[in-house]
Image (cartoon, rainbow, N blue to C red; front, side):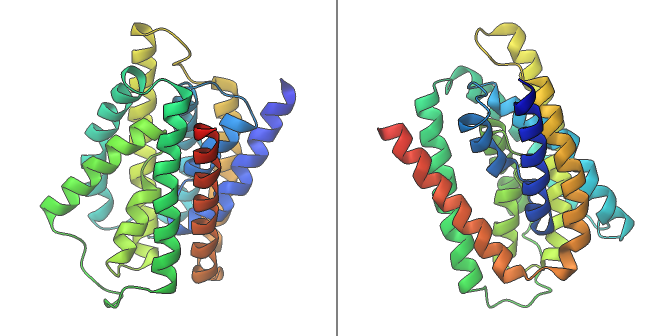
Length: 260
């Protein structure tokens, strides 16, 4: 329906504008909109969300690259280890977690602790210096691989997990945000491709909703650029609290729906 295309575009635009400054593509918040408002079936909602990341990602990344914020090895290390994880997560999502009830419980289990953690870390920030070093290579590899698996299952690139974890170590957001968005973009390409292949070997709605994913992504492309441009002008504390509260509220909603 035509209204779903425009609604998807508007949702992608608004969500990406708010989330891009903290290194999150917005897919974690767009997915419940696709499920409940736009009526995308499960598990097709996951590759549709990954398609959103693929289309929306270049907006914020181009702005960060223009500002010189993509320099450094952090982005390369995150990409190298999230890529195999997201492929494994896609297979788990299609063959082990196809039911909407189980998937809603997974959404709730992911969003509730994420939202609580975001709020807690904002109100009680880590006492480490702002130039704190990134995790060791083995720790970063394990973290990125795990986040990649979760991202492949949930239909996100992983920035909404990687960002808070790295921020909790005391790393500054201007360093984290470009790296996590780069990892989100590249893993989403791999995840979307994995779902396209898996759709050939499985029954049910596994392929993405192409038109809706493109519409959401175009909105996210514009919103991501605007959000990256506004990063230095936005109050980080208020923005993190907003993201944490929204994530926790969505988690409660989906837990109630799954258990009802």
